[in-house]
Image 1 (cartoon, helix red, strand yellow):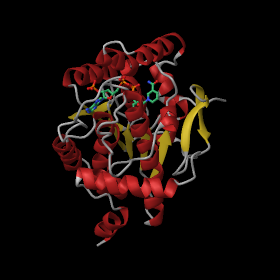
Image 2 (cartoon, rainbow, N blue to C red):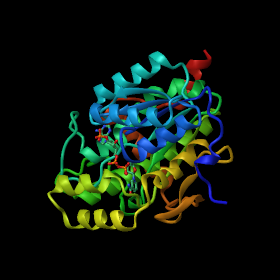
Image 3 (cartoon, helix red, strand yellow):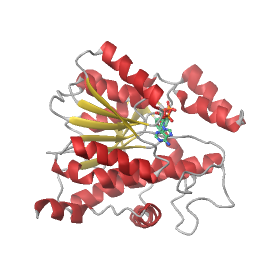
Length: 315
Ligand SMILES: NC(=O)c1ccc[n+]([C@@H]2O[C@H](COP(=O)([O-])OP(=O)(O)OC[C@H]3O[C@@H](n4cnc5c(N)ncnc54)[C@H](OP(=O)(O)O)[C@@H]3O)[C@@H](O)[C@H]2O)c1
Protein backbone atom coordinates (compact mmCIF):
# COMPACT_ATOMS: atom_id res chain seq x y z
CA UNK A 1 0.00 0.00 0.00
CA UNK A 2 1.31 3.45 -0.89
CA UNK A 3 2.17 5.72 2.06
CA UNK A 4 -0.35 8.54 2.53
CA UNK A 5 -1.36 11.19 5.09
CA UNK A 6 -3.46 8.47 6.75
CA UNK A 7 -0.18 6.83 7.81
CA UNK A 8 0.93 9.86 9.84
CA UNK A 9 0.88 8.77 13.49
CA UNK A 10 -0.92 10.72 16.20
CA UNK A 11 1.08 13.91 16.73
CA UNK A 12 -0.88 15.16 19.74
CA UNK A 13 1.40 17.09 22.10
CA UNK A 14 4.05 17.62 19.38
CA UNK A 15 5.20 20.92 17.94
CA UNK A 16 6.13 21.33 14.29
CA UNK A 17 7.68 24.32 12.53
CA UNK A 18 7.18 24.57 8.76
CA UNK A 19 8.87 27.27 6.70
CA UNK A 20 7.00 28.65 3.69
CA UNK A 21 3.76 27.38 5.23
CA UNK A 22 1.64 30.07 3.54
CA UNK A 23 1.40 28.27 0.18
CA UNK A 24 2.27 25.29 -2.00
CA UNK A 25 3.92 22.29 -0.35
CA UNK A 26 4.46 24.15 2.93
CA UNK A 27 0.73 24.81 3.33
CA UNK A 28 -0.08 21.14 2.62
CA UNK A 29 2.61 20.03 5.06
CA UNK A 30 1.23 22.34 7.78
CA UNK A 31 -2.32 21.14 7.11
CA UNK A 32 -1.41 17.44 7.32
CA UNK A 33 0.68 17.87 10.49
CA UNK A 34 -2.10 19.90 12.14
CA UNK A 35 -4.62 17.27 11.02
CA UNK A 36 -2.58 14.64 12.88
CA UNK A 37 -2.78 16.73 16.06
CA UNK A 38 0.51 18.66 16.05
CA UNK A 39 0.68 22.30 17.07
CA UNK A 40 2.03 23.90 13.90
CA UNK A 41 4.11 27.06 13.70
CA UNK A 42 3.57 28.44 10.20
CA UNK A 43 6.77 30.38 9.54
CA UNK A 44 6.02 32.60 6.58
CA UNK A 45 7.08 35.74 4.79
CA UNK A 46 3.98 37.17 3.08
CA UNK A 47 1.63 37.81 6.01
CA UNK A 48 -1.51 38.25 3.90
CA UNK A 49 -0.96 34.84 2.32
CA UNK A 50 -0.18 33.42 5.76
CA UNK A 51 -3.44 34.74 7.24
CA UNK A 52 -5.47 33.22 4.41
CA UNK A 53 -3.56 29.92 4.63
CA UNK A 54 -4.20 29.78 8.37
CA UNK A 55 -7.90 30.54 7.78
CA UNK A 56 -8.15 27.79 5.16
CA UNK A 57 -6.68 25.18 7.48
CA UNK A 58 -8.75 26.36 10.43
CA UNK A 59 -11.98 26.20 8.40
CA UNK A 60 -11.23 22.66 7.31
CA UNK A 61 -9.84 21.55 10.68
CA UNK A 62 -11.54 23.59 13.42
CA UNK A 63 -9.46 21.84 16.11
CA UNK A 64 -6.16 22.72 14.41
CA UNK A 65 -3.62 24.44 16.65
CA UNK A 66 -1.74 26.97 14.51
CA UNK A 67 0.45 29.99 14.99
CA UNK A 68 1.83 32.21 12.26
CA UNK A 69 5.36 33.53 12.83
CA UNK A 70 6.79 36.05 10.34
CA UNK A 71 9.98 34.78 8.68
CA UNK A 72 11.93 36.23 5.79
CA UNK A 73 14.73 33.78 5.06
CA UNK A 74 16.44 36.47 3.03
CA UNK A 75 17.22 38.44 6.19
CA UNK A 76 19.33 37.10 9.04
CA UNK A 77 17.69 39.59 11.40
CA UNK A 78 14.26 38.22 10.48
CA UNK A 79 15.52 34.65 10.95
CA UNK A 80 16.85 35.56 14.42
CA UNK A 81 13.56 37.25 15.36
CA UNK A 82 11.50 34.30 14.14
CA UNK A 83 13.69 31.83 16.06
CA UNK A 84 13.41 33.96 19.21
CA UNK A 85 9.62 34.07 18.89
CA UNK A 86 9.41 30.30 18.47
CA UNK A 87 11.82 29.64 21.34
CA UNK A 88 9.91 32.00 23.63
CA UNK A 89 6.80 29.84 23.21
CA UNK A 90 8.28 26.38 22.84
CA UNK A 91 10.82 24.67 25.03
CA UNK A 92 10.95 21.84 22.57
CA UNK A 93 10.35 21.35 18.88
CA UNK A 94 9.61 17.90 17.49
CA UNK A 95 9.55 18.59 13.76
CA UNK A 96 11.24 21.26 11.64
CA UNK A 97 10.50 21.20 7.92
CA UNK A 98 12.86 23.51 6.04
CA UNK A 99 10.60 23.82 3.01
CA UNK A 100 10.52 27.42 1.73
CA UNK A 101 12.31 28.09 -1.52
CA UNK A 102 12.73 30.00 -4.75
CA UNK A 103 13.62 28.56 -8.15
CA UNK A 104 15.61 29.87 -11.10
CA UNK A 105 15.04 33.59 -10.63
CA UNK A 106 17.26 36.36 -12.05
CA UNK A 107 20.30 37.41 -10.05
CA UNK A 108 19.22 39.09 -6.83
CA UNK A 109 20.69 39.65 -3.37
CA UNK A 110 19.26 39.08 0.08
CA UNK A 111 19.28 41.85 2.70
CA UNK A 112 22.65 40.49 3.84
CA UNK A 113 24.11 40.52 0.32
CA UNK A 114 23.87 36.77 -0.34
CA UNK A 115 22.93 35.37 -3.74
CA UNK A 116 19.14 35.05 -3.27
CA UNK A 117 18.59 31.34 -3.97
CA UNK A 118 21.51 30.24 -1.80
CA UNK A 119 20.49 32.80 0.82
CA UNK A 120 16.82 31.81 1.06
CA UNK A 121 16.95 28.10 0.19
CA UNK A 122 20.01 27.26 2.26
CA UNK A 123 21.71 29.97 4.37
CA UNK A 124 18.49 31.21 5.98
CA UNK A 125 17.53 27.63 6.87
CA UNK A 126 21.05 26.94 8.16
CA UNK A 127 20.79 29.89 10.58
CA UNK A 128 17.22 29.01 11.57
CA UNK A 129 18.12 25.39 12.33
CA UNK A 130 21.17 26.44 14.34
CA UNK A 131 19.08 28.86 16.39
CA UNK A 132 16.29 26.33 17.01
CA UNK A 133 18.78 23.54 17.83
CA UNK A 134 18.44 23.65 21.65
CA UNK A 135 14.66 23.14 21.37
CA UNK A 136 15.15 20.34 18.81
CA UNK A 137 17.65 18.60 21.08
CA UNK A 138 15.25 18.82 24.04
CA UNK A 139 12.56 16.82 22.18
CA UNK A 140 12.50 13.01 22.52
CA UNK A 141 13.36 12.30 18.91
CA UNK A 142 13.07 15.44 16.81
CA UNK A 143 13.18 15.38 13.01
CA UNK A 144 14.66 18.04 10.76
CA UNK A 145 13.67 17.71 7.11
CA UNK A 146 15.56 19.51 4.35
CA UNK A 147 13.70 19.87 1.05
CA UNK A 148 15.91 19.31 -1.96
CA UNK A 149 15.07 18.63 -5.64
CA UNK A 150 16.28 16.50 -8.55
CA UNK A 151 17.97 19.79 -9.52
CA UNK A 152 20.59 18.97 -6.87
CA UNK A 153 22.07 16.55 -9.43
CA UNK A 154 23.01 19.49 -11.66
CA UNK A 155 24.34 21.54 -8.74
CA UNK A 156 27.97 22.11 -7.85
CA UNK A 157 29.16 21.89 -4.26
CA UNK A 158 29.73 25.32 -2.71
CA UNK A 159 32.98 26.97 -3.74
CA UNK A 160 34.24 28.79 -0.60
CA UNK A 161 35.90 31.40 -2.85
CA UNK A 162 32.69 32.23 -4.72
CA UNK A 163 29.53 30.88 -3.05
CA UNK A 164 27.45 33.78 -4.39
CA UNK A 165 28.44 33.09 -8.00
CA UNK A 166 29.85 36.58 -8.59
CA UNK A 167 30.43 36.98 -12.33
CA UNK A 168 29.19 33.46 -13.12
CA UNK A 169 25.52 33.60 -12.15
CA UNK A 170 22.91 31.52 -13.93
CA UNK A 171 19.34 31.07 -12.61
CA UNK A 172 19.46 27.25 -12.87
CA UNK A 173 23.08 27.05 -11.78
CA UNK A 174 22.17 28.93 -8.60
CA UNK A 175 19.08 26.77 -8.03
CA UNK A 176 21.14 23.57 -8.50
CA UNK A 177 23.80 24.86 -6.11
CA UNK A 178 21.19 25.77 -3.47
CA UNK A 179 19.38 22.44 -3.73
CA UNK A 180 22.67 20.52 -3.50
CA UNK A 181 23.40 22.65 -0.42
CA UNK A 182 20.04 21.50 1.05
CA UNK A 183 21.04 17.89 0.34
CA UNK A 184 24.52 18.28 1.85
CA UNK A 185 23.05 20.10 4.84
CA UNK A 186 20.52 17.33 5.54
CA UNK A 187 23.16 14.58 5.39
CA UNK A 188 25.78 16.67 7.21
CA UNK A 189 23.41 17.55 10.04
CA UNK A 190 22.59 13.85 10.49
CA UNK A 191 26.30 13.03 10.71
CA UNK A 192 26.78 15.67 13.40
CA UNK A 193 23.69 14.60 15.35
CA UNK A 194 24.82 10.97 15.29
CA UNK A 195 28.39 11.86 16.30
CA UNK A 196 27.06 13.84 19.28
CA UNK A 197 24.80 10.94 20.31
CA UNK A 198 21.70 13.15 19.90
CA UNK A 199 18.27 11.57 19.61
CA UNK A 200 17.25 14.02 16.88
CA UNK A 201 17.50 12.97 13.23
CA UNK A 202 17.95 14.84 9.98
CA UNK A 203 16.38 13.60 6.73
CA UNK A 204 16.12 14.83 3.18
CA UNK A 205 13.04 14.95 0.94
CA UNK A 206 12.47 15.61 -2.75
CA UNK A 207 8.86 16.49 -3.60
CA UNK A 208 8.83 15.51 -7.27
CA UNK A 209 7.31 17.73 -9.93
CA UNK A 210 4.36 19.42 -8.26
CA UNK A 211 2.01 22.08 -9.50
CA UNK A 212 2.60 24.95 -7.06
CA UNK A 213 3.54 28.63 -7.39
CA UNK A 214 7.24 27.70 -7.67
CA UNK A 215 7.27 27.54 -11.47
CA UNK A 216 4.87 30.48 -11.96
CA UNK A 217 7.06 32.67 -9.74
CA UNK A 218 10.18 31.82 -11.73
CA UNK A 219 8.40 32.63 -15.02
CA UNK A 220 7.15 35.92 -13.59
CA UNK A 221 10.51 36.91 -12.09
CA UNK A 222 12.45 36.14 -15.27
CA UNK A 223 9.87 37.88 -17.44
CA UNK A 224 9.04 34.59 -19.21
CA UNK A 225 12.32 32.65 -19.31
CA UNK A 226 12.24 29.72 -21.78
CA UNK A 227 13.13 26.84 -19.45
CA UNK A 228 11.08 28.41 -16.68
CA UNK A 229 8.04 28.40 -19.02
CA UNK A 230 8.80 24.82 -20.00
CA UNK A 231 8.73 23.60 -16.39
CA UNK A 232 5.68 25.72 -15.63
CA UNK A 233 3.82 24.05 -18.51
CA UNK A 234 5.06 20.61 -17.51
CA UNK A 235 4.04 21.06 -13.86
CA UNK A 236 0.62 22.36 -14.91
CA UNK A 237 -0.05 19.51 -17.34
CA UNK A 238 1.66 16.51 -15.73
CA UNK A 239 2.75 17.61 -12.24
CA UNK A 240 1.40 16.15 -9.03
CA UNK A 241 -0.91 18.16 -6.82
CA UNK A 242 0.61 20.06 -3.89
CA UNK A 243 -1.02 17.48 -1.56
CA UNK A 244 0.85 14.67 -3.35
CA UNK A 245 4.08 16.65 -3.59
CA UNK A 246 4.11 17.25 0.16
CA UNK A 247 4.07 13.51 0.95
CA UNK A 248 7.85 12.83 0.82
CA UNK A 249 8.58 15.57 3.36
CA UNK A 250 5.64 14.44 5.51
CA UNK A 251 6.89 10.86 5.43
CA UNK A 252 10.43 11.97 6.31
CA UNK A 253 9.01 14.05 9.17
CA UNK A 254 6.65 11.48 10.66
CA UNK A 255 7.06 7.86 9.53
CA UNK A 256 8.21 5.98 12.65
CA UNK A 257 10.28 3.63 10.48
CA UNK A 258 12.21 6.46 8.78
CA UNK A 259 15.81 6.96 9.95
CA UNK A 260 18.25 9.86 10.01
CA UNK A 261 20.25 10.34 6.83
CA UNK A 262 17.52 8.90 4.58
CA UNK A 263 16.09 10.48 1.45
CA UNK A 264 12.36 10.32 0.66
CA UNK A 265 11.15 11.03 -2.85
CA UNK A 266 8.46 9.89 -5.32
CA UNK A 267 8.81 6.28 -6.50
CA UNK A 268 9.26 7.33 -10.16
CA UNK A 269 11.76 10.17 -9.61
CA UNK A 270 9.26 12.99 -10.12
CA UNK A 271 5.94 11.18 -9.74
CA UNK A 272 4.40 8.58 -7.52
CA UNK A 273 4.03 7.76 -3.85
CA UNK A 274 6.78 8.69 -1.40
CA UNK A 275 9.45 6.02 -0.94
CA UNK A 276 12.95 5.83 0.49
CA UNK A 277 15.55 6.39 -2.25
CA UNK A 278 19.27 5.62 -2.15
CA UNK A 279 21.71 8.42 -1.38
CA UNK A 280 23.74 8.97 -4.56
CA UNK A 281 26.72 11.32 -5.09
CA UNK A 282 28.63 9.77 -2.17
CA UNK A 283 32.02 10.46 -3.71
CA UNK A 284 33.48 13.55 -2.05
CA UNK A 285 30.40 13.90 0.16
CA UNK A 286 32.34 14.34 3.42
CA UNK A 287 34.53 17.08 1.95
CA UNK A 288 31.56 18.89 0.38
CA UNK A 289 29.73 18.85 3.72
CA UNK A 290 32.76 20.25 5.58
CA UNK A 291 33.02 23.05 3.03
CA UNK A 292 29.30 23.76 3.27
CA UNK A 293 29.59 24.14 7.05
CA UNK A 294 32.63 26.35 6.78
CA UNK A 295 30.99 28.65 4.20
CA UNK A 296 27.61 28.70 5.95
CA UNK A 297 29.07 29.59 9.35
CA UNK A 298 31.35 32.20 7.79
CA UNK A 299 28.57 33.87 5.78
CA UNK A 300 25.81 33.78 8.41
CA UNK A 301 28.14 34.24 11.41
CA UNK A 302 26.00 31.58 13.07
CA UNK A 303 27.67 28.46 14.46
CA UNK A 304 25.90 25.15 14.10
CA UNK A 305 27.76 22.90 16.53
CA UNK A 306 25.57 20.01 17.64
CA UNK A 307 28.05 18.61 20.15
CA UNK A 308 28.46 22.00 21.88
CA UNK A 309 24.69 22.55 21.96
CA UNK A 310 24.22 19.07 23.42
CA UNK A 311 26.85 19.73 26.12
CA UNK A 312 25.26 23.09 26.99
CA UNK A 313 21.89 21.40 27.52
CA UNK A 314 23.25 18.72 29.80
CA UNK A 315 25.43 21.14 31.84
N1 LIG B 1 6.99 22.25 -6.79
C1 LIG B 1 7.94 21.45 -7.26
O1 LIG B 1 7.80 20.86 -8.35
C2 LIG B 1 9.21 21.24 -6.51
C3 LIG B 1 10.14 20.32 -6.98
C4 LIG B 1 11.33 20.13 -6.29
C5 LIG B 1 11.57 20.84 -5.13
N2 LIG B 1 10.66 21.74 -4.68
C6 LIG B 1 10.97 22.48 -3.45
O2 LIG B 1 9.83 22.52 -2.62
C7 LIG B 1 9.89 23.66 -1.76
C8 LIG B 1 8.52 24.34 -1.71
O3 LIG B 1 8.22 24.87 -2.97
P1 LIG B 1 6.74 24.95 -3.55
O4 LIG B 1 6.69 24.05 -4.72
O5 LIG B 1 5.73 24.80 -2.49
O6 LIG B 1 6.74 26.44 -4.12
P2 LIG B 1 5.81 27.70 -3.77
O7 LIG B 1 4.39 27.34 -3.87
O8 LIG B 1 6.33 28.79 -4.65
O9 LIG B 1 6.17 27.99 -2.27
C9 LIG B 1 7.41 28.52 -1.91
C10 LIG B 1 7.34 29.00 -0.49
O10 LIG B 1 8.61 29.57 -0.15
C11 LIG B 1 8.35 30.82 0.48
N3 LIG B 1 9.46 31.77 0.36
C12 LIG B 1 10.05 32.26 -0.76
N4 LIG B 1 10.98 33.18 -0.43
C13 LIG B 1 10.97 33.28 0.93
C14 LIG B 1 11.68 34.05 1.87
N5 LIG B 1 12.59 34.96 1.50
N6 LIG B 1 11.43 33.87 3.18
C15 LIG B 1 10.50 32.97 3.59
N7 LIG B 1 9.78 32.22 2.74
C16 LIG B 1 10.01 32.38 1.43
C17 LIG B 1 7.12 31.35 -0.19
O11 LIG B 1 6.51 32.34 0.62
P3 LIG B 1 6.12 33.81 0.10
O12 LIG B 1 5.04 33.62 -0.89
O13 LIG B 1 5.69 34.51 1.34
O14 LIG B 1 7.36 34.37 -0.50
C18 LIG B 1 6.28 30.08 -0.27
O15 LIG B 1 5.63 29.83 0.94
C19 LIG B 1 11.03 24.54 -2.31
O16 LIG B 1 12.15 24.39 -1.48
C20 LIG B 1 11.31 23.95 -3.68
O17 LIG B 1 12.66 24.10 -4.07
C21 LIG B 1 9.49 21.95 -5.33
